[in-house]
Length: 289
Image (cartoon, rainbow, N blue to C red):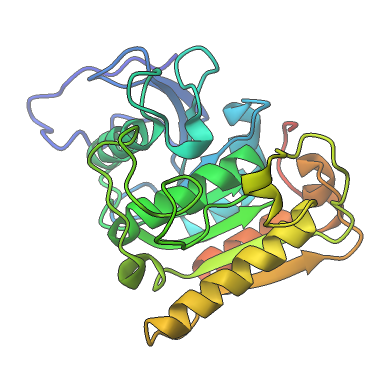
């Protein structure tokens, strides 16, 4: 693990993190919170920060490694928090007060620390999540829209609809289990979000089922389509141009590794987040998910 100490002559903490190296770190303010970070060869000064959120397989290091070629091509600092099963109960829902650590608050602290250590920009971040990570990401956007420049989510199992009549996470009415969070649709509906799902991601395995969730559909494809439609309808209701788009990956299933290898998920994610896909990035990096 990279151990960092404060440098009195470098109060912002720049140049403390090695470049071109996957670093495992713990928060200085909370040693129980682990994360991985990669600083590209061009350094972190004013660089954008892209946060990658794992699914329930909880393999943040491997997830980050697969995006290194894209980070290098565009000069992006990439960060992958580790939300453990023991400490982060319900991280996909941003966490719940009284049931472990809040994953939304942990991410906020991680981003601020990374910005301090690398001189990267934390004014607005870029977010990607797959499966359970996609659940976290879209809910984080709804809770903290002003902190997010763009987001891309892939293969989410279910979604929080922009429904003011139901409590979070089945709607956007405030929840006592998520103190301090208020949802403002006029803000989060402005954030560009790209929703990706494999056209053959129709297996019921691993998909949350209940009466309150099944109204979204019974497969990840149906739920993605219905959530995007609901976000479009909500945007129009508030007089806004829809900012959420859907892309179905032909022949794609649920496997992150397969989507990266055969459906160019990495290129699609970075194109959605940063515009033109990086020409120098090829393959999907190393690691497995």
